[in-house]
Picture 1 (tube, one colour):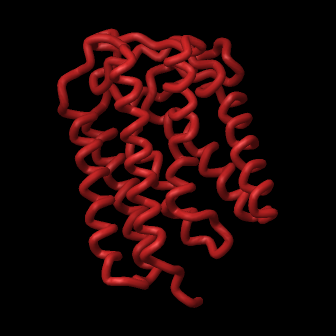
Picture 2 (cartoon, helix red, strand yellow):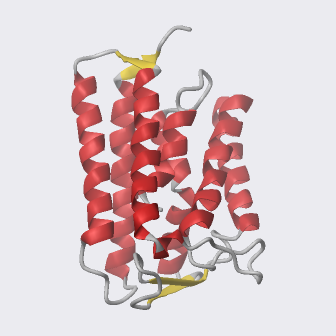
Length: 219
């Protein structure tokens, strides 16, 4: 799951007390921000194993602090705590935390059994990355269904809204096409990790642009 992690963010952004769309995009990929950051520091680890799954060569053998359920809950609580600290908005904090938590649940669908409950076996994962005919349309449906939901429940506040949405759609499609059809990485090197972090950041920036050009429709 890549751009599919942004689906909960777009749905959550239609709540009247939700944080901004850009911040929710960060929430949707927060544990991957954490994972690649910790991997750069050598705290968590992965390697490239061709054929690991049909769609993805990442061998995610050591990620207890980000991709265990307990670790994800900790990230969610930390993110919610920061939102509450800066806004004193309990609803916004809860929504942000739930979007963070959604990451583990979506990963559970597609990952090979490399997710854990608390950093040790049993290893979990339904392995849809081994079934592209299911995983690919599912990710597209989740992502752009959520975007359609967001657009239907918001209205434009500026002519720039169409530009912002087009930019977001193009970025998400480009990232997913590269993820699916681009050349497989040969090694789990620093360049790959930085590229992933940059992709997440660009998506969040584009989402923030969209969020600034739209507002919720009146009930």
